Image (cartoon, rainbow, N blue to C red; front, top):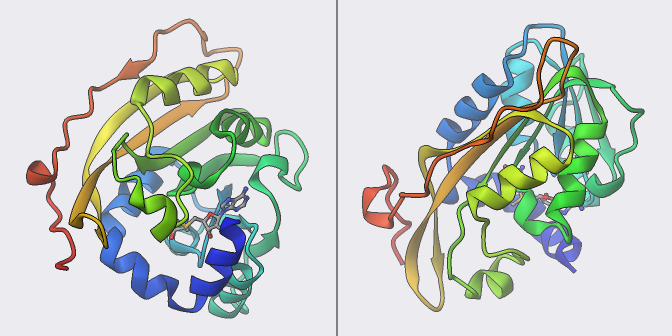
Length: 235
Ligand SMILES: C[S@@+](CC[C@H](N)C(=O)[O-])C[C@H]1O[C@@H](n2cnc3c(N)ncnc32)[C@H](O)[C@@H]1O
């Protein structure tokens, strides 16, 4: 069960995370969410609050959710006394919020850990208000099966058309799944240093003014390890 793994690594997650991906992913995700100070966002599968920290810096109110007790404890320590922040231990597939609670929902490197990505996306869409934005950054499809054992990944990344289809099925409009300039780099016992492309998927809840008929924009994955701007962590 991945929760046990994340409970174990929670104290070191900030250090581990930096060897895999950095603030450039966060900056791109937060920009895509188009939030103004005072608006409310939910950070799902928040870990130690990587996205939450960037959102708080922009004056956004944040509810962070993670199923790992130890991750939630790390966030509560890190953001103690910060106004506009709350951390919840909970399942992203059953978020503890009413429909339409947030202006944006964001999730970084969460989707490949859940049992059902389609349900996870539908649940994030549920808690968005009309016009609210969903932004997901995660791994392009890859073949590093060893990450199942080493990082408790459930999905070997995703095809971008699949992610776009799940967003459309959740009733979202203006769906776009495109590449970032970034890779997730890690070292595996099997393959040594590897780098995997990272996509950014965005969509929004239709308002009266949004027609939910536009075809999703899906850019082909092209981030071969050699074309990533990151360098895999040396073995
Ligand atoms: C790879 S970490 C990413 C953490 C953080 N978003 C970041 O970018 O540093 C994945 C996180 O998702 C959480 N997670 C996995 N499945 C979950 C679920 N069903 N509900 C809530 N959190 C979940 C894990 O506990 C872990 O903290």
